[in-house]
Image (cartoon, rainbow, N blue to C red; front, side, top):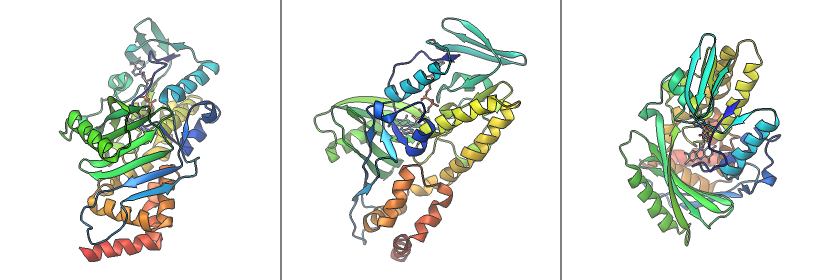
Length: 362
Ligand SMILES: Cc1cc2nc3c(=O)[nH]c(=O)nc-3n(C[C@H](O)[C@H](O)[C@H](O)COP(=O)(O)OP(=O)(O)OC[C@H]3O[C@@H](n4cnc5c(N)ncnc54)[C@H](O)[C@@H]3O)c2cc1C
């Protein structure tokens, strides 16, 4: 049984689906049958901070191969996944779950329409998960980011645009969907920065870059789990008769905010674990081995990633080095692991030179 009252629906999201995420869904979703946009390049913009002595371009396009990242409407992508689940035998009840209780002898799920008994419940109900609330703790504010921005109707393209910013630490993005741009920014939920102020930052950026001239802007705001390393190391994703997947589990990359891959992957691990005799232990181990190590690496790098020293360095390195542009293209496509990122960057002669000149300039 699958409970969800929302479809068909759009979801506040960039809609960026990496090659590794598409590969997981390839027998369920054909990107050619959706109006997905194959991304040809990623434009990086930075504003000069400390590194005034170096003169390099601050607006650099990183070529992508068109397979590494597609941008889709979540209405179509999620709709295709739902249709595939129903084709495979799932019964879809279009109703909101209003209560879930997990006991020794089974699970009771109460929806706005009916009540069901089950052997096991998978909480796939996003960052405000009801299942999470019933089986463990809701996310604290410091474990969430708030993404805020606009859908710019009537403008599209085949390039994503990213400006790295240090206050709040992160980036402003524009992702082209088939008939609009999804433009936004993200800040820690406990940063004290009101959503209205973040939205003004995005509106000013949109105006300054001229990226959505003539578009109608529709505002949105939505939480994203953003866990620190100790939270990831202590994360409980399953217990007797329950498990959590995707955002409900907290499985989002705290640097790139890629969550679709982890939602698809954890859904698959949950399904495979149910076929074993011990789904709780099996699923917890898969998440620990295949997601948490990578996410913990990202969480450890996150603070340094958006410091002005680093974003200046990256801007110059991207402008000057094809090797660094290739690393960035792989990072965007989900092909570059954080565990080996530092060594691959330092292995490029250009980054080493840039790093040393930055140290020398201080
Ligand atoms: C602004 C923004 C931009 C993002 N950009 C990207 C991006 O470009 N690429 C990327 O990979 N990730 C991105 N993410 C993250 C990504 O959107 C999520 O990680 C992903 O959608 C998680 O999938 P999920 O299935 O776990 O949760 P969701 O997509 O949130 O789905 C949860 C579902 O549960 C249903 N539900 C909730 N409560 C109940 C209930 N009580 N009863 C029944 N049903 C319920 C909802 O209706 C919904 O359909 C972005 C997030 C935001 C906010």
